[in-house]
Amino acid sequence: MENEKRSYIREEQFYSKFKISKDQKHWQDGKIFDLSAGGLKFYAVGDFKIGDTLWFDITIHYLVFQSKMRLEGEIRREENHQNHETLYGVAFKNLSPEMGIQIDEIILLKKRFLNDE
Image (tube, rainbow, N blue to C red; front, side, top):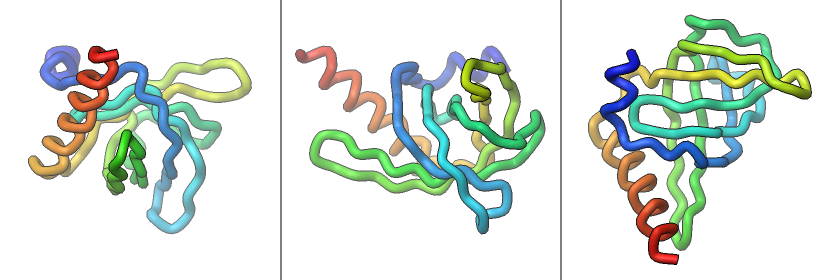
């Protein structure tokens, strides 16, 4: 997976709140830390394990637009952190090419805007 990880445009300072679910019925809050079309890293307090399939409802507000996405992913890594939070690494599953392009465009727009300042 390390080679796969490098093939995506990444934003490692992508902080955003979102909702996480194991069953698409019961949702809890989480915080995205890192985002790419290959997956994301998020902080949460929850009963998640490596191999779990999760759904993510993400609303990205950036500049003058808003993008809503529901994405499916599998937990591949976990690291314990302070305040009983855990950092989870997720690989997206069943991501459409269009959604991958949308994520890439959001990240590129953010990088371009920050480099212009």
